[in-house]
Image 1 (cartoon, helix red, strand yellow):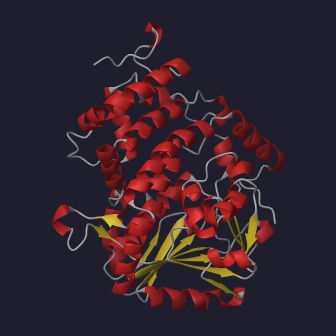
Image 2 (tube, rainbow, N blue to C red; image 1 turned 30 degrees about the vertical axis):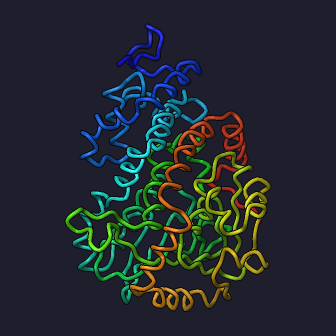
Image 3 (cartoon, rainbow, N blue to C red; image 1 turned 60 degrees about the vertical axis):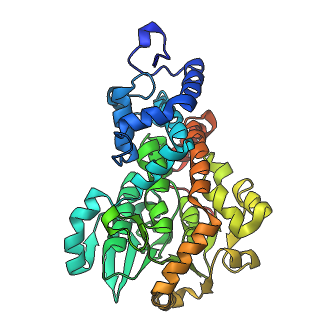
Length: 409
């Protein structure tokens, strides 16, 4: 099989010219099932995307950038990188487009992380774990996940994605936990000092400085902790009865605002409670990137026209306006948030809720729908994070404010 898509002087590393990329896309459409099978030993090994791409870079260096090429860009600003992650995106697009390989990769990412498995005995014993950005505490059978990225208004970072996946795994694996809650901590940021904030979306400083990785942030968050919130953990075959996933109901508590990635997150929760003075925004057109699965899921909540107003025109929805009823299950006085969250979590903590949420998800977003969307997202998002308009926007924001996030409203 000819895997050379480069000029002779670039053999052994990925050629990033448009002609080479087009040739690889065409080749992968025909042969990705065979290549994925080789990397996963006939689909007998479940490899997370990081390991899958590492192996692909070794086995097929003309197709996927290797660790040496990628390491040369570590520490560089986004504007100074070659865009090698686009070539990772081309490979993941093909893997996810292939029915058997795509489903196998989705399953691999639904398995618990090694970090969570190592922390589980202690968490099950004490009911507490401080992971860094996220702290998890079990109270009366409910796992409370509190986000502590206070300095940047809970903007999402690599550490945030890592800790959220670990915390979600712990809550799902812990036999004493019957439901989960996600909420932001009180802030230390001077503009919101002492106030809780749900999420300010992607961390613009990390994106500007090249710290928002395509694989370990953008793709991992969709296939990892967000998918686990929605679909649950995939169990080992000997434990997969009566169903192959371990699921629990989830409550989101929105204080102040849910912007960007935080707004996307709300679309997978079973129950969303918002403070009456909070708001929702998915400023994809302003940021320039694709808002995860927001384009797929927001239509179910607001309809096609409402989703376009939010995603394409930057419309902000306040908790007290009529359209907020499609996004929030409860809108309460900020002082009543604690009581409302506790009541909702305990109300949802029963086996009938678990069975019915499973069937709702099966109806509204089958795995095949998820897989098809992710395939195109994998490619489009890789292109967007290296597009000149995005690089210019995050550069202007960073230079103007020297803050990790810019919040308006």
